[in-house]
Each structure stands twice: as structure tokens, then as C-alpha cells.
Image (tube, rainbow, N blue to C red; front, side, top):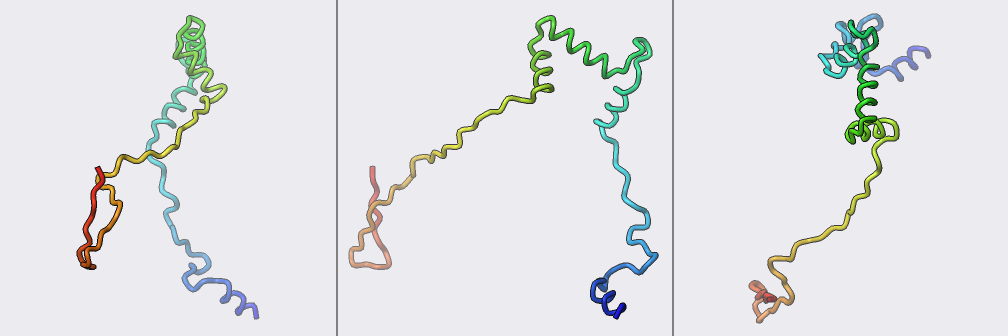
Length: 118
């Protein structure tokens, strides 16, 4: 009965026990600019003896205190998040090229006449 359960629940395409379907493992990530920048900013600046990211924060604060609107916006956007924006989703369609109003059948079912509206 144990073999019945095993064959019932194990697909026929499964790898045998002790054999890996991916012997080299997951491929390594490529270079990421974000990871490189995080690594660089986490190191201490040799002249200032502070982490570079802390120096950036201080510089942004100084610019905001001098009245730099872009620095002020950046600080608030990171602290509070971007303000929500509403979008108008009304659909408008252009005027049709040909307005078909009435099909006139002058007795000819195969070639109805189209009447244009001006």
C-alpha cells in the first residue's frame, strides 16, 4: 500500500531521490546599479568619518532650509508619500465619419442604398 500512495502522489516526471534537477543552482544576479549605490552609500566617507547616506540626508536638509523647493518636496515625498492624484476617466469619441441613419431597400436586397447625414 505504501508503494501505491507513492506512485499515486509522485508524478512520473519527478527526479529520483538524491538527484537534482538543477545541479548548478540558481543563476547569480547580474550587476544592479541600485545595489552598487546602496553599498557605496553605506560606507563611511574618508574625510567626514560619517556614512555617505547620512551626509546626503544632511545636505538635502540644508538645501531645504535654504528654501530649495525641490529639496522640500523630496523630503515630504519620502516622509509622507506622493499626494494622490485623481484621474478623469470620461470617454469621448470623435464625430463619426459616416452617420448611417436609414438603409433604403429599393427592392434590391443585395445592394441597399446608404443615406448620408450632413
